[in-house]
Amino acid sequence: MVEQIRIGALISGGGTNLQAIIDSCESKKIDGEMVFVGSDNPDAKGLKRAEKHNIPFFIVDYAEIIRKYKEDPQSLKLPKDYDVDTVRKKQHLFSQKDDIQKVVSFFNTRAIAESLLIDEMSAFPFDLLVLAGFMRNLTPYFIDKINTNSDTPRIMNIHPALLPAFPGVDGYGDTFRYGCKVGGCTVHFVDYGEDSGAIIGQRSFPILETDSIDTIKENGLKLEWELYPECVRLFSENRLRTEKKIYGLGKGKTFHRTIVRILPP
Image (tube, rainbow, N blue to C red; front, top):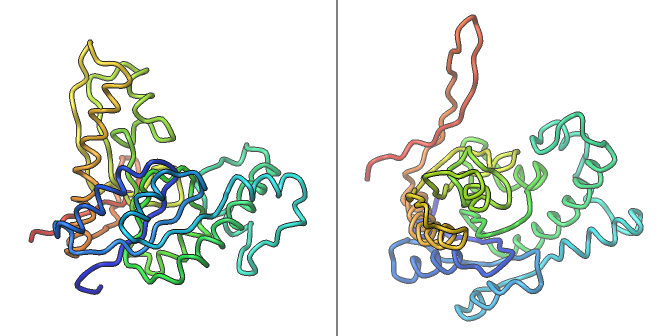
């Protein structure tokens, strides 16, 4: 790893977490540089943040790709190095009970889009890819191309809930509707499932009877803007290590878990 890490980001919306990481780089809290920002959404307001800081940015319009594929699958070319059966065997997003045609359609459209992302990203060498409100699940096709060393994950995500509780797109909303007394956020490495990768860090806050969904989101975001740059800083200092652990459940049963150790300074 180089002394100053090169960070790429993918966003879908306003990019407030992107801004927190950019600010931490510029203030030298993180010994790193944001080298590109990509988005699946042409209208993502976060792209204006990249432009303001003179960071190269690009767009891969997922919605348009999905629309074209639905109209005529043959109109779009699948990547030559993509094999849907291999991706289906690795992924943890769908079960065997899900409609096979829908699953294949999902992975085909994502592979087309991800191939374009990779083409755009190839112009900007990077050490870490941060998902800063990127509202698309990444597939094994993409993940394997970024994590060229399986022992050194390079894709980081922030989630608006205390994982493993409430994965998915509406973590704060799910936390509120469930009636939780504590909310929070989680930074984790990305794996083949939905918000299921090894946890790097978490922050929490109490939820009061007077809180609303809006105040929960407000409290959570403040913690996100602190936690995400902190986890990126740990990566930049080469202080994160992943380990695969095997735990016994009795009667010969075991389960596997990947943990992240934080090394001392």
